[in-house]
Length: 248
Image (cartoon, rainbow, N blue to C red; front, side, top):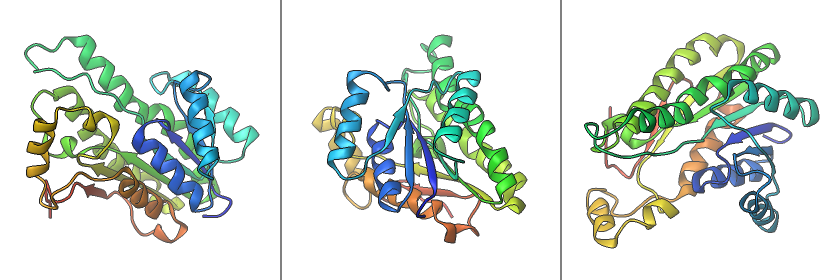
């Protein structure tokens, strides 16, 4: 993937950071986007990536804002070059049982997790088709596949991602562009590790491999799908959940 340009949304999160690292190690020029760009957190991320030997640019993008996404994509492509690889990784949670969930909780999650699929992919995919090459990888979730108590909004948004993947994959396949989904299970990210130990142990007990996953394991799958050699794989959902939910 040497000289390929990759754009990764939600770059400063645990999974986003691992994906940026994996793509940079594979030879991509990586541009991360995050709402925290330009803040102390964003600057610390840039420094950490440089210290790790995988320097990446970080630009501010609000994946909920259609016009902002157009402007940012245009700026990146004019400064850095055409985007060859897009990883839609930005996502949030606003958990609560459906009966007690208000519309603001619902809308916040759908705006960030699902509307972002259109907002970021739309200004990128046309250029990919014109050039005859593109890799789009959308990050969904185990809970978008099987559902989860207290996550009607999150499960709906993540389930919708793969529907989006399958539809767009059919439209762009003949132009050399692939679109795939990666659905991680429970990972040893900051969010999961903050869960009380007894709850975390109950989660692990449901995972056949007997442990939480690592963000790097998800990132490896993304890097594989982004390769030039992965052009015959499209419209697929790669479940990375330690066997917690198996599909044929």
